[in-house]
Image (cartoon, rainbow, N blue to C red; front, side, top):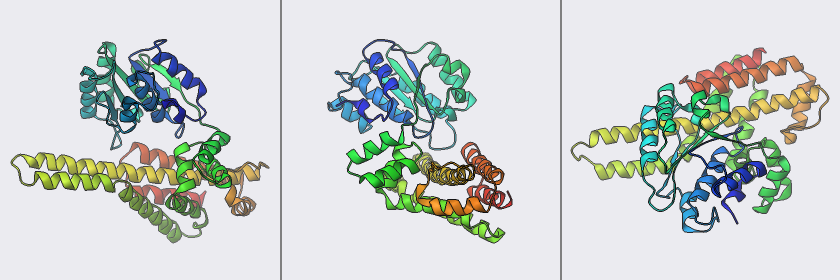
Length: 368
């Protein structure tokens, strides 16, 4: 057993990380890149655990378990709750890197979605990376090296992750007890995203959300239907975000109740409320993004069918896909994919109103 066992289809990256833990090629800054679902943050957390573990990542000792539970004293996980990593977040990262480790050789800071660093935050980190504390290791996660400031990535050792194959994901799910047919379907529909495949295989609400997203393709006959379908999608994403952040909201409510009307608590109350609001917004946008990925793949399947291909992401939608292929052109469907990808980019990079962005996309799909 090893902490690296959770990495699916990443033998090259795993080999490099194991060597670094053993002292071959170890450095103070690492950049984990790869497409969504490849396991960037999973790999970074596994590496963090291995650096804490006396046995190099056994997966069963107290150090490994603490990292898995996110309670390790020498490992800090930074996950942006909003659309950007701001100056205050950078100050937190720098402060944690400056700490001396309590129970291990390294103080490790893992930054998920490091591509969301603002220029100010990135330049603050750069100063620390130019003269890093001797005991600190910074692990940055981003979709690609181009998403990180050039002066920062030049100071990082790169670990490139690939999307695992459908066969690899299927094997993981079946080992977890998922029936093989469902595991194979979920692995294909998830497009290489292990976490998404696991959700589709085991969570009925995830399957319902996927069906709701794909249904948009059949709800474009009028402007009114476009607007209604858009509202349904955003409403579903909002409901999912509330479920996913329910525990955090309960914790925040308990904290605010405990603080009560203590003198000076107004600032803390405002900070907690803003953090929950930001976290809910991020969760809602993540849910929308998953839906848009599914919808883009549906139109991709239509285009593939029109061009004579047979390998479909949404194989269970084959009949509807063939019907759509017979009544449209590949050029039209490629424009539809572009409209969906443009909506994803807007939702990821700006503070645009979600409903307006999705409505604009739906109208573009209708007029393509």
